[in-house]
Length: 183
Image 1 (cartoon, rainbow, N blue to C red):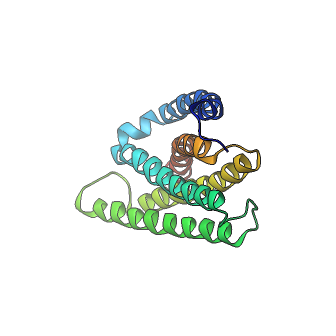
Image 2 (cartoon, one colour):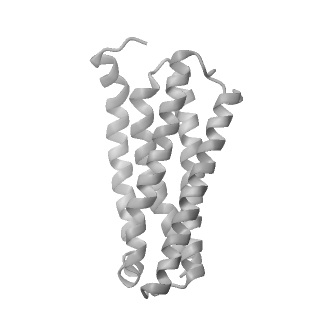
């Protein structure tokens, strides 16, 4: 893989354009729960956290896998031990972060009336976090290995795909958990 701006542009341009449309779709999904967001503003507070933490987890995993592939430390195989270990550690980190967030947000409901019960907040935050983490972890592994196997530089495609997918998945996961727990 040769590092030249033409290669980077060729591998990234179409993906970036597609990701813009996916980002717009995420906004439309978020708009579908506008009424619940007005009634329970704490839920709106969760959107950037879900998207940010999920995107960061995916970006770190993508960078680790990409670096491992470039240096030969990781084989471009889904069954590679290093791939599996990185996948599991990302899932564990996501569970810890979203578990802590769920407890923190839920405990704040005792001090500040948020309109939702402790259990509702735990279920919404933890459920949306788990859905986002699991989805983005598998998307990251697939995207990294697929792009590498297609002789593309994962550094050019993984981060845009992962961060945009996370923005969309985080919103959809939150909407799903709100629908499941509140509606």
